[in-house]
Amino acid sequence: MESPPFGTLPRGRHHLTREQVAASQRERLLQGMVEVVAEKGYAHCSVADVLKRARVSRETFYQHFADRHACFLAAYALAADLLIDVVAGAAAGTPPADRFAAALDAYLRALAADGPRARVFLLEIYAAGPDAAVRRFEVQRRFVELVGAMLLADERWARLPDPGFACRMLIGGISALVSGRVAAGEHAALPELHAPIVAHVRSLLER
Image (tube, rainbow, N blue to C red):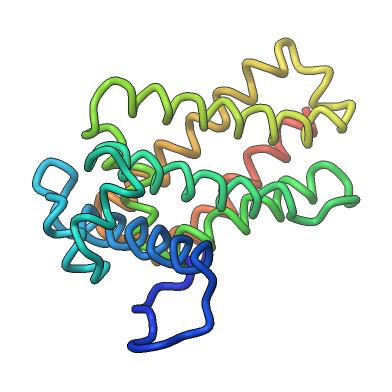
């Protein structure tokens, strides 16, 4: 899950369009929000902190976002979309169990490669209030649908007593395992979860 480009605009005259300048400013604000929240926590993050990190003016911030909360939710939405794209694009066209294994590997490696965004995506979202928690549950539902479609392509998974519930349990369990590692500052070790999770899924298919 690579971070979007993050840097200051060139000084003086440049050849960027107004739209390109605005897009760059927005990207920097979102990345600044991720970095500050990962370091200080959502409760202790201020707009001033984000402005300093992103190197943009307060006026520019409010041209893009109504307030700190709106900026944070936009940063979370970007993280979610990046992760879902990573998972959805993994090993398409391969057998269902293999595709799940590849998707899980891509998910774990993406989070391991971007500790700040992993912390925002998995932990700090719950500190941002009830509406943010609803966003998190909606994203988890999208993951359930995505992974469920992969696994339901295997007739063995489809024969489980309640394959939909089994998938919700699987995604919930993965989320808990991953969140625990990130909370402990062990995001770099997330790929270690791959083998036991895949082994568990294959055991369900082989019953």
